[in-house]
Image (cartoon, rainbow, N blue to C red):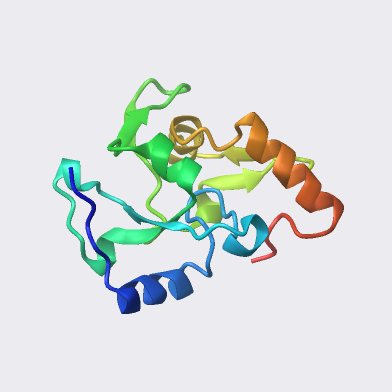
Length: 142
Protein backbone atom coordinates (compact mmCIF):
# COMPACT_ATOMS: atom_id res chain seq x y z
CA UNK A 1 0.00 0.00 0.00
CA UNK A 2 1.33 3.42 -0.90
CA UNK A 3 1.66 6.19 1.66
CA UNK A 4 -0.95 8.94 1.66
CA UNK A 5 0.46 12.45 1.33
CA UNK A 6 -0.87 14.75 4.05
CA UNK A 7 -0.71 18.42 3.03
CA UNK A 8 1.71 20.42 5.21
CA UNK A 9 -0.95 22.88 6.39
CA UNK A 10 -3.27 20.05 7.44
CA UNK A 11 -0.44 18.30 9.26
CA UNK A 12 0.43 21.51 11.11
CA UNK A 13 -3.20 22.10 12.09
CA UNK A 14 -3.52 18.56 13.46
CA UNK A 15 -0.21 18.88 15.33
CA UNK A 16 -1.42 22.09 16.97
CA UNK A 17 -4.77 20.52 17.90
CA UNK A 18 -2.91 17.56 19.42
CA UNK A 19 -0.49 19.87 21.28
CA UNK A 20 2.37 18.09 19.46
CA UNK A 21 1.71 14.94 21.53
CA UNK A 22 0.69 11.40 20.73
CA UNK A 23 -3.07 11.14 21.11
CA UNK A 24 -2.74 7.74 22.78
CA UNK A 25 0.24 7.79 25.18
CA UNK A 26 0.66 11.61 25.31
CA UNK A 27 4.36 11.43 24.45
CA UNK A 28 5.58 14.80 23.22
CA UNK A 29 7.65 15.38 20.10
CA UNK A 30 9.86 17.65 22.20
CA UNK A 31 10.69 14.86 24.67
CA UNK A 32 11.66 12.34 22.02
CA UNK A 33 13.10 14.68 19.42
CA UNK A 34 11.27 12.63 16.81
CA UNK A 35 8.45 14.01 14.69
CA UNK A 36 5.17 12.24 15.40
CA UNK A 37 3.28 10.59 12.59
CA UNK A 38 -0.22 11.24 11.34
CA UNK A 39 -2.53 8.42 12.41
CA UNK A 40 -5.66 7.45 10.53
CA UNK A 41 -7.98 6.80 13.49
CA UNK A 42 -10.01 4.50 11.26
CA UNK A 43 -7.23 3.07 9.07
CA UNK A 44 -7.44 3.30 5.30
CA UNK A 45 -7.48 -0.52 5.26
CA UNK A 46 -10.70 -0.36 7.33
CA UNK A 47 -12.21 2.16 4.90
CA UNK A 48 -11.09 5.22 6.85
CA UNK A 49 -10.54 8.42 4.92
CA UNK A 50 -7.73 10.93 4.77
CA UNK A 51 -9.72 13.84 6.13
CA UNK A 52 -9.12 15.98 9.18
CA UNK A 53 -11.81 14.39 11.36
CA UNK A 54 -10.11 10.98 10.93
CA UNK A 55 -6.54 12.13 11.57
CA UNK A 56 -4.53 12.74 14.74
CA UNK A 57 -0.92 12.60 15.90
CA UNK A 58 0.60 9.37 17.17
CA UNK A 59 4.07 8.32 18.18
CA UNK A 60 5.55 5.64 15.97
CA UNK A 61 5.20 2.81 18.52
CA UNK A 62 1.50 3.54 19.17
CA UNK A 63 0.83 3.90 15.44
CA UNK A 64 2.68 0.72 14.53
CA UNK A 65 1.21 -1.40 17.33
CA UNK A 66 -2.24 -0.14 16.37
CA UNK A 67 -1.73 -0.99 12.71
CA UNK A 68 -5.10 -1.60 11.06
CA UNK A 69 -6.89 -2.46 14.30
CA UNK A 70 -9.95 -0.49 15.35
CA UNK A 71 -11.20 -2.68 18.21
CA UNK A 72 -10.14 -5.46 20.57
CA UNK A 73 -11.48 -7.74 23.28
CA UNK A 74 -11.51 -6.27 26.80
CA UNK A 75 -9.74 -8.63 29.21
CA UNK A 76 -12.21 -7.90 32.02
CA UNK A 77 -15.57 -8.03 30.26
CA UNK A 78 -14.68 -10.31 27.36
CA UNK A 79 -16.51 -7.91 25.06
CA UNK A 80 -15.13 -6.45 21.85
CA UNK A 81 -14.84 -2.65 22.12
CA UNK A 82 -13.51 0.14 19.94
CA UNK A 83 -10.04 1.55 20.58
CA UNK A 84 -9.73 5.05 22.03
CA UNK A 85 -10.38 7.87 19.57
CA UNK A 86 -8.10 10.79 20.53
CA UNK A 87 -10.01 13.21 18.34
CA UNK A 88 -13.45 12.68 19.89
CA UNK A 89 -12.81 11.17 23.32
CA UNK A 90 -11.22 12.67 26.42
CA UNK A 91 -8.03 10.94 27.57
CA UNK A 92 -8.75 11.36 31.30
CA UNK A 93 -12.11 9.61 30.92
CA UNK A 94 -10.38 6.38 29.82
CA UNK A 95 -6.86 6.48 31.28
CA UNK A 96 -4.91 7.59 34.29
CA UNK A 97 -1.25 7.56 35.24
CA UNK A 98 -0.18 4.83 37.65
CA UNK A 99 1.14 5.77 41.07
CA UNK A 100 4.66 6.64 39.87
CA UNK A 101 3.45 8.36 36.68
CA UNK A 102 5.30 6.02 34.33
CA UNK A 103 2.53 3.51 33.65
CA UNK A 104 -0.72 4.24 31.79
CA UNK A 105 -3.73 2.53 33.36
CA UNK A 106 -6.87 1.93 31.32
CA UNK A 107 -9.84 2.78 33.53
CA UNK A 108 -12.61 1.77 31.10
CA UNK A 109 -12.96 -1.05 28.57
CA UNK A 110 -11.85 1.39 25.84
CA UNK A 111 -8.83 2.39 27.91
CA UNK A 112 -7.88 -1.19 28.76
CA UNK A 113 -8.02 -2.44 25.17
CA UNK A 114 -6.10 0.58 23.93
CA UNK A 115 -3.32 0.18 26.53
CA UNK A 116 -3.04 -3.51 25.68
CA UNK A 117 -3.34 -3.29 21.89
CA UNK A 118 -0.96 -0.35 21.52
CA UNK A 119 1.44 -1.80 24.13
CA UNK A 120 1.50 1.61 25.79
CA UNK A 121 3.57 0.33 28.71
CA UNK A 122 6.30 -1.52 26.86
CA UNK A 123 9.65 -1.60 28.67
CA UNK A 124 11.42 1.07 26.60
CA UNK A 125 8.74 3.73 26.96
CA UNK A 126 8.28 3.06 30.68
CA UNK A 127 12.05 3.44 31.13
CA UNK A 128 11.98 6.73 29.18
CA UNK A 129 9.02 8.02 31.17
CA UNK A 130 10.87 7.28 34.42
CA UNK A 131 13.82 9.35 33.19
CA UNK A 132 11.48 12.20 32.20
CA UNK A 133 9.84 12.06 35.64
CA UNK A 134 13.24 12.49 37.32
CA UNK A 135 13.70 15.86 35.63
CA UNK A 136 10.07 16.99 35.95
CA UNK A 137 9.05 16.59 32.31
CA UNK A 138 6.42 13.93 32.85
CA UNK A 139 3.55 13.24 33.18
CA UNK A 140 1.95 16.02 31.12
CA UNK A 141 0.07 18.50 33.31
CA UNK A 142 -2.88 19.09 30.99
